[in-house]
Amino acid sequence: MLAIALAAIVLLQRSEGGALGIGGGGGGGGLVSSRGAGNILTKATWTLAALFMLNSIVLTILAGGGGEPTSIFSGAGTPSAPVEQPAPSGPSAPVSQ
Picture (tube, one colour):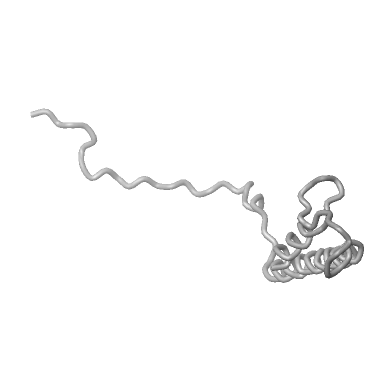
């Protein structure tokens, strides 16, 4: 949810480099002036980015909290036990008559 909101807020901002900004130019008329809207969107972007980072850190701590650390190399030096083949039940080559 935070990632979607952050992406939406970023896309609503006015583009200064000709990129993907949807909030584009326009005249001075409107509910909020372009300067005021820019300040609101900038503050919202920073707030959502901070919440996103905090959320990521908290989820990382919660996910890695339990269990003992393991490694795929912990058993690399020990040879495995050989697998025994079952004895054949009949002749392995055809018998001619």
